[in-house]
View 1 (cartoon, rainbow over the protein chains, first blue to last red):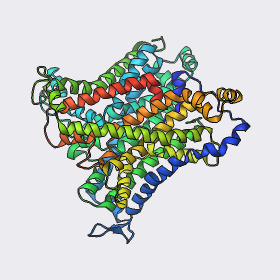
View 2: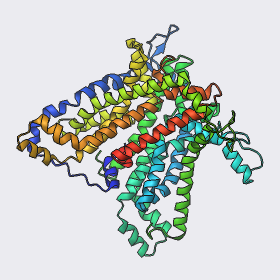
View 3: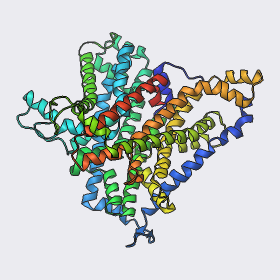
Length: 310
Length: 267
């Protein structure tokens, strides 16, 4: 996902080249065996359950709740064909894409300032960007609920009305916009960090050269900085998109009934309707979406022949 | 700031950055302000000052019970993910065997898999197995999600270990175990600690896996908080939230002390 050598570069530490001597071959077998416990654990509690979910998504549930034959693709068809469910799919895509794009546009300036400022400024910005990452998502969703509260007593409305931007309170809470704002808050660091490490790797001489040759600042950014920071952008966009698409808490708190996302629909099908196969089919679609985006991003990063050791 | 940003470009950069800092802090600061305000309903600007909501939270049996469960669960998760993750990280960095890259991808795959689906899949399997104890189920689910984080931080610190020191120790007559204990481990201690702390925090805040595996008897803090938000109007929620924010800040400062923030997250 993110890369450690980026982090190492940001810190200004150089990882030693991973040279291996022939003598290490003697240790090959026992050292390799150290991975076995975790492999076994993940196979049993992650890989096998995931396959089980895939299987139940093409099976049928009878009236007693037993899942089995006949095999069918009906649950997938239902997700696409029933307008109510198809809308959830589109809402999820729309919110994820808009959030990722907004995060990109807003993260570039922050990452640039983070990378090119004095150490003190860098430290403060890093702390402010990262600290909320550790605060529970439920708490952050609640914070936005308070900020966006509909009616004149909400913070945003109070500010807008005090500044006479609007005359009457606006309703943002329980809309798609509120979910985008909340998701942006929760996943913004995931965009800033890869971007900052990509930007820190760019040779400043390249930008200086462009400037000396008379390029204005925006042209330097568009022609030199932006293309060279692509790996960071691709990594960050993928992360933000995947996490937003798979979120549950933020749409539940800030979206209400008007911005139901795939995660909320899965929860509802399993816990309220008890329709396991349909819930599983939606989950498989969500995984497919996330894996597809990750696949494309890996292909892009490989295609640029970037050296991305973990 | 050096002269690389100048004029209008610099102005735009700083304005957006300052705006984003406000955007990030505003909801958290508002929660904190509301937690000490003296009105039963949330109003802006917050009114008065009181600590009565904190008194209420500290007597709230459900919340304290959830806290205890969350802390125990996070401790268990930390132990479990270190137990699996640290040896696996050694295998990935030092081992040379067929399919190393594939195995590495497999071990880190829970990171890109939507956690919500991981939890659901696990619920299905555990239900079939007849595993009734929610505490055990939560522990298993949390270790699945947190162990890749441990692998990443430990792999990073292992790559920075100077193998010549180990060779020197072996040459001077230390056996393999002594070398590990006295030479290797001290070099990766901060990485292991960061991984463990990370596992603790991820477990403590985890919602998407927890929501499937918890039950009415055993509900960790995020679930209890969510229920208070959605079902009933409870004026002590801001105080509960502030307690969680402050705990997170302590965690952040610890991480910063151990390995530096960016490295801990991007590792």
